[in-house]
Image 1 (cartoon, one colour):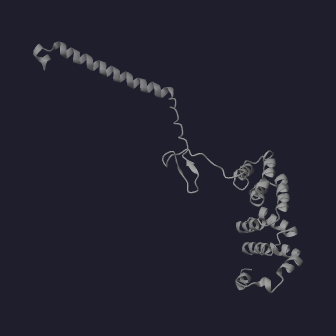
Image 2 (image 1 turned 45 degrees about the vertical axis):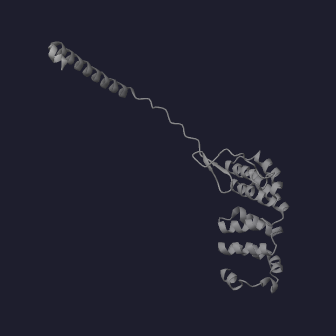
Image 3 (image 1 turned 90 degrees about the vertical axis):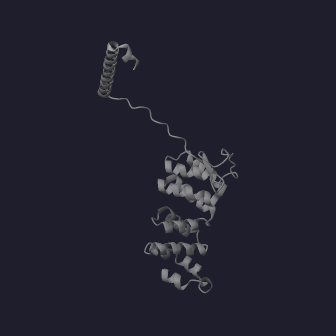
Length: 232
């Protein structure tokens, strides 16, 4: 597949060969042999299907499954790009079904692409599913989608809380404020064991006794001293 891509580079092969008709006629064979290709070739096949406007009907469902199930990042990205130009109604039906009976990973994938394809029309679908979703990860993706500009009612205007960059935060390049996290509360003192308390009190008692003894010695010396010695 890589050699084919190299030799056909910068050539309008679509004008010389009816690839679209061939891809339609040989659809079962294309789908069947897809798994035998390496990941780069699989991504190329999906890209070709998108180029020839074939992301519909059986090819749509095939590409949608690759988007949900492929372990290759390159294949998933190619599938997502293809789905972005697919009929929105078809994607909405498949994604809604996935949200209803797919596993958490598939539901997360469906929730992620719906806003990109349907825009504001994805809002009721996402809101309806959010009320029933149990996965924290999927819920987070849905909430992010509902809060994005794609499905929003318009640009979100956030009141400035910072007068200038400083310890409280800074203004990011996109105009949003990045606030510093709140300071963590200092933990209180840890209670000491009774044995430690007893040892500490014993040291205090010894220190006090030493000071008292020293005071008594100084007092005795003062009382025995002459008037002249007391002046010095």
